[in-house]
Image 1 (cartoon, rainbow, N blue to C red):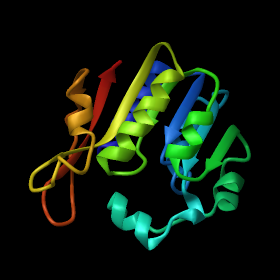
Image 2 (image 1 turned 90 degrees about the horizontal axis):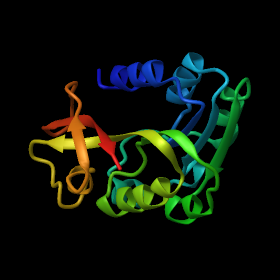
Image 3 (image 1 turned 45 degrees about the vertical axis):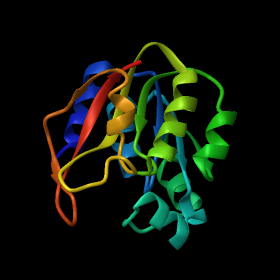
Image 4 (image 1 turned 30 degrees about the vertical axis):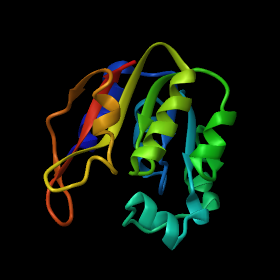
Length: 176
């Protein structure tokens, strides 16, 4: 499973601050914070603001979770959560992060915006990982990070998970 690679990078890098775009149900955040329990965590998601329209625009197929439920799950940690469209919420982010995990919306427009604002907050030498690198019959002109990461030094990580309808999804490490 590709997420094992994410956790291996957290273990290896031992970040003191984590920015996650696409917190979803908070379980991945808990996994990362169990590895580095003293890290500052900052997560972004639509949470209950997601709609059928945003799901269609972002090719989201997962159920939604409330900000309150995820906040409760992350209460043992130094965690800050932001609800809303990241095109509006991420530009307000301040601080620096030494580990960035971009796994929010799937449209190129959203990923491009997330990357634009996240890179402003990168600490020197920050580790950056993107999800949603697609191979197969997926329209990478509209969805995924493929077109965005090709502009940077990057490596596609080996683990791949199948995509409903065909194709594969992988993670990418990017050097900004």
